[in-house]
Image 1 (cartoon, rainbow, N blue to C red):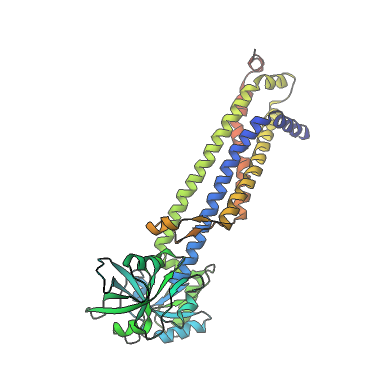
Image 2: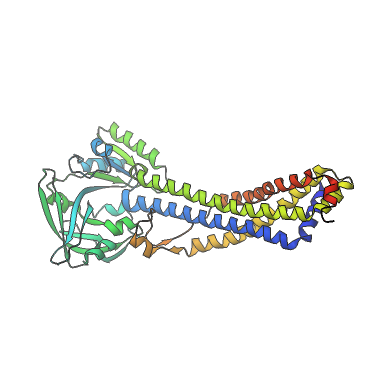
Length: 416
């Protein structure tokens, strides 16, 4: 075996140009895989964080009727005692805040602009909302409202579409539980820019007490949102929280953020499968290049192969020699690919890609609104390196067997 390895190494050195060309094809495919994998992982991680921090919290407590249809905005099934629910959730060690969610049409007051938007308005408690929905990465023009103010904070893109800013007014038109229409005039006190594109595009926040007053909710809330770290097992925690609340006599349903974002998660899963197919095709293209290179190399060396066989070298030893040579090319390609891929991933993690203009114009499916940063995955590097060597070896099997099936006499006269 040491002799075969030395022979394979000499062949690699002897054909430097072909070795480097073949290894480079593998390296490019490997680097493309690592950079794409880093982008997808980064998009998934940022989307998950944004869903938890700016959209759903870690979990949502609602009445069983509202929990059965979480996507339906209705005031018909509010929590009868949101204060008791908040206290019970906090007793379990979680942050909690009540919210009143309702559908409304938003228009700019006192302007001739025909622009209006149907949005999900949220009445939030200024004192506790920031405990569940962190504000440290939010950029605010103006200020947040205080309890009791007839005021509103809008998402940046929504405010731009309406042409309003701090100091101007907007009107919300909605329906109350009774079915009658209600018009709410609010002063814009702040414009918020968030990492979450949905918050920028549709965000409408007003004081909870004002929302309850204007909609005649009598202090009720449609949900209590619970703070759970994005990396935690939200489904298990939500199930445990629901059991604990029911033991205290509270008739509620608890949904994890994964339950609330199931449509988004299904979409990202489909996107991941499509991206995985693209990555697979990249490796197929690299594999075809490697296979063609080996095939040409063996045809060029038919006389050499025939001479070794005529001198008594067993076909099995020749077979393993060429596989070792292919493995060496795979190792070289893996080393180059890991180096190049490492540089690309480092740039993605440190600098990222700016998708601000694209995300502003269209929904790309991921919950990112600006710069997309990559993510490190050591196991992706390990798996890609192993796959690179495996691809090189597998691609060499067919041409090697084909070359060894030729009669010795035909191999010897191949270049005659």
